[in-house]
Amino acid sequence: MGTGMRTVSPAERRARLAVRHHLAPAARAGSVTGAAAGMIALHGTDPASVYLAAWARTGSADKAAVEHALYTERALVRMLGMRRTVFVVPAALVPVIQAACTDQIAERLRRQLTQVVQRAEIAPDPATWLKDVGEATVRALAERGSATGAELARDEARLRTQILDAADNPYGGAVNLTSRLLTLLSAEGLIVRGRPRGGWTSTQFTWSAAGARAELPATAARAELARRWLFAFGPAPVSDLQWWTGWTTGQVKQALAELQVTEVDLGGAAGIILTADEPALDEPATVPPWPALLPALDPTAMGWRDRAWYVGHHAQALFDRSGNIGPTAWWDGRIVGGWAQRKDGEIVVRLLEDTGTEAAAAIAAEAGRLRAWIGSDRVTPRFRTPLERELAESQA
Image (cartoon, rainbow, N blue to C red; front, side, top):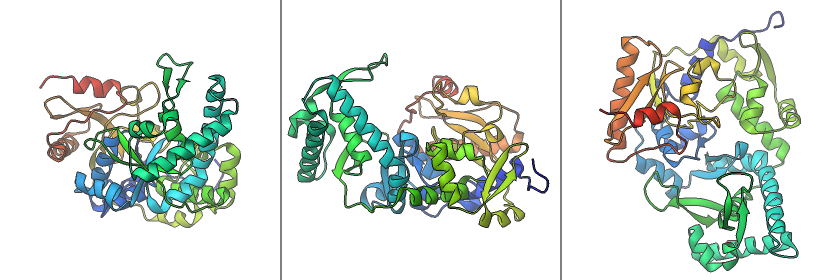
């Protein structure tokens, strides 16, 4: 690396993570919305992960508090965002993520779905037909106030049109248009996911019409999102920012050109940090070693593409083949094991390295606290990983 460049060690990055991700007890967020804002967004693909991630960062928020923020106060919004992934986002950040990431995703989704309709020979003008069905669906939803996809399909018969979904996938086949079109309409910001039918782990969401959306220029939105990511996840390689956002190389360069950044040495690899944030490196966070049990797809665990500095050699046990991480056990900024809930409700933890007695006891205490918080419910990650599956099926 260049002479005079500031070196930032993994220990320094972990110390920043402890505070900025609200994981150290002294740095926990005061609210569910604050926990999400500190991370930019919480992963929302697995509904239970949202609740567990908020709990881990507040230390006390119960399920009712998460539901209130999501469905009553509407301070948090579930939307399609970075890398075409579902996130739970603070309402104030929705326009930023929409313009920075989701609008481009929506364009691609509409183009792809139009091609599906065309191949199925459903209508002579597939683009116009799809637009008309979408507008009719939004009108039906506005009349109902909220509805499931099945309810909307009873109102708008064309939603029941059969299309061939994921033809190149062994799990693909003929399905109703409903799910694909609702996903598209949500990506376009016309409808939003609402309260699920069922408990906090349910995946059957209702939908409602979206309000008027604030329009932001895509270039400004990308610069703002990059700034927020660097504050929460930096210093980090530029390649990590590109992976997290799903942007092209050109879009990343354009966004960073709008910011003042400084290059640092991450132990042999180049990284960047916001120039205004660089003085904070001279005042490293001093927090006692801390335990955490984070859920599958937690935004900290999935925050970087290069994860060796906090995952170590444990990736094979903790990730599935698609790169989804399972539930993890942390000690002082590093993943040291994994956890799962058995059928009898117990939280079982396996440490993948010798952490010492202090860490093992602290993580065990955290498992007991999590067990009490979950109560009589059962949590099974949407994407099963080798260690999680083994632990969940283990005997007491």
